[in-house]
Length: 174
Image 1 (cartoon, rainbow, N blue to C red):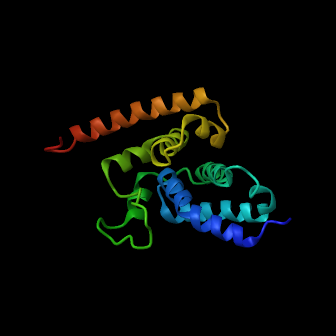
Image 2: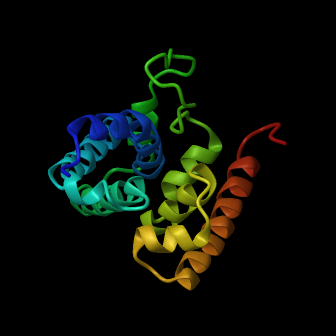
């Protein structure tokens, strides 16, 4: 029995915002994240007869989105902290279009996150934002569980250092 397109539409509606939020936290640009997510879902649609049968179709889309994120990072290495700040716009701007809290709000944490190498940023976002267990992150990123743990530890250490240094440079920082 062929899988109905209605099934894909329901899946898309249920998963799209989560995938965009995760990718946005990794790449630091909501528009680029939307492009990447749309491409990942487009690839899922062309393979929907197969992807729909997977136990976790969203994991397949996340994996594709992660690969596309890496490809985008290779093409646009100059995307750094300033692009994240520019993408955010003014603080307090309305985010009615998104139900989720904007992961790109200009905070010391978001700036420090953009300074992490993309592999560390990926595992950190998947672990803390997506609340995925280490085994699922390893599967999605196609790396070993040990590599996930090493990247998480390195990312935590570097974030701590970045945030400590940024606090020292700010008057009255606590």
